[in-house]
Image 1 (cartoon, rainbow, N blue to C red):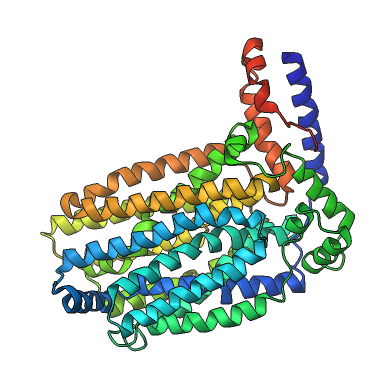
Image 2: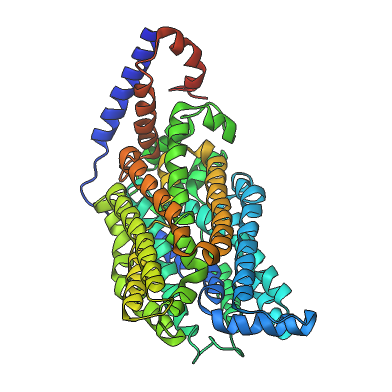
Length: 528
């Protein structure tokens, strides 16, 4: 039995090395007109959810006034600063709950309803409901309606992060997969930077007009659905569902370019589909596969990086922290805008750098910056405490530093890198179940993080950050040691890199142990 495993491993490893040697493009081609249009439509107009998120992220002072007005009107309750912080945390967690519900109920439907149906039509409908509820919450002075709007906006986050980006990764050719996926995030960053201008007190960031962000998002949704309706579904998904090859070929030619070699692309799809023995692979079956399990470890750790780190804290407390350390509301918003504009060239260069430099060095750098950011947050708090809980020029400097460092980490892709890895490492039959699991890990960890920080930070102060620092250090070391480079490679070859490592690590087992683990290799090199 051990000799059988050895022969199987050797033959598979040889084929993998040959394929990787053959697939070595020397230059990154510019995307086709259709793929460029898809990137612009999904990246810019498709960022309506992130625009709605700006209200909770940037408008803390007008929202605090709104919360108090609503609570006094309906419950005769006046909230102090701690009460506003707790209510903000609960509302943010309601959005996380919506995300978890969507991950469980909707994300798996991308294999049956289609990538485009979930990513465009269903997501837009839920986004419109969220925007309308936000507008209505202001009219009725109802914190309950505002909370419901956050529940629905949370519902669409995994559809944006998971399904929409998976849709784009499947439309792009292999050598542009990372470029296309990250370009959508770059477009969204542009929308958020420009949207940030509207959150200033002079525009919509005041007690009277904050709800207008919902009006802006509603307009974006209408234009987005109209434009995206002209884009075809993912050609890989169309092939996966058994659609006529001529129809699939026409879509491939649109997204890959007029010079695309259709038979070669269809063959690469077939190779990916045959990496597993099941057409729809459940999470339990994926976990029992050696290569898939190790791929899942890598993706799950990447999913925890933004959830158990400074990014999650920043989502709710970026402005309150800067206010604590000496910024005014106007200067805090202005600083965020200027920092975003300074880092904006990086956001434009990142899709190209993913294919030129590679995924691994950029992701490791973003992890190092995330670790540095949470450490700087601790230093700022320690200085604040040492000065008798008084702000000074030093607390302002450290607050500015951790804002920039965390922004750089996010700008390098730490927020969505686990989705790029899922697109790079996981075969089509396992994408829905494993992407669902990764998103669930991310959002559940975010809920725990929100409760943890909001509950313990007022009690133990900066000490609350120590476990987060240790977690970030672990994530950095783990990904540095285990993350493979996936750029410019077909999914089948990336999958074999991880699987060959998994088999190699088990090569030292005794023959009897090999016999007991043969079931884990079921489907290794087989076809349906």
